[in-house]
Image (cartoon, rainbow, N blue to C red; front, side, top):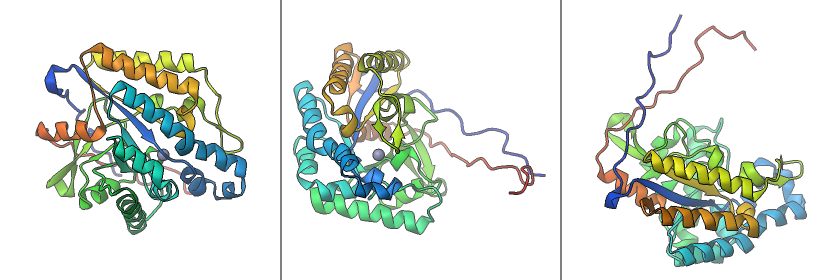
Length: 302
Ligand code: ZN
């Protein structure tokens, strides 16, 4: 009978932030547009209403978000699937021209669950090629679609020369993740479902029928999390989708949170590439993540 390893990896330790800052905050935008539904619900391509709901993101949401970021003087990170880059090249170039980071988010927002490594690598390279061709960007960061990387993903990112991933949830501060048998590492900047706008607001008939929350309640929740992470020296990573948060009342929440982080005075507001670059400079000892496994013979067959 097999037994699991006696303990998991040690928790990520505190991070010293630059400039005497007490904590860090990053505002990130996943420009999924149609890709997330084309991969997850291919039949949605025949639903013009649903497709238009997704198109709102790059067409209306991104310009509104860019205006907020410019007014606040904040540099953000935009995770762009390759398909989005090809369908909305002008929008993605506007993001780059505004000085923001464009990072990798798959080609068609593919689910990696069950995908063989060679298939995952092929999808990844197609996304990489699209960002380079359309926007002239060689991304240093990656976020797995649906925050669902495979156990192989860190190795793939390392093999393609990326600096960081932002998909895991086992810490509130960034850390170095061991790859390539301990000979190298990848910076991990953790995220959390509680700081994602999709779960709060997204309603798509037959696909994502969540409750549309009152933006004031969402603001209170995110604001409290920002204050909590600030007190603990953590890294606040907000994930917003332009087709969701691009709406005026929700964009106002984003604007207020950016203002809250800036006005705190002791929170370093930066892109994920800047945060990952800082973490890399600290020379942290990499953590080794070992996959848990179902004990052999424990579950009934079938
Ligand atoms: Zn996404």
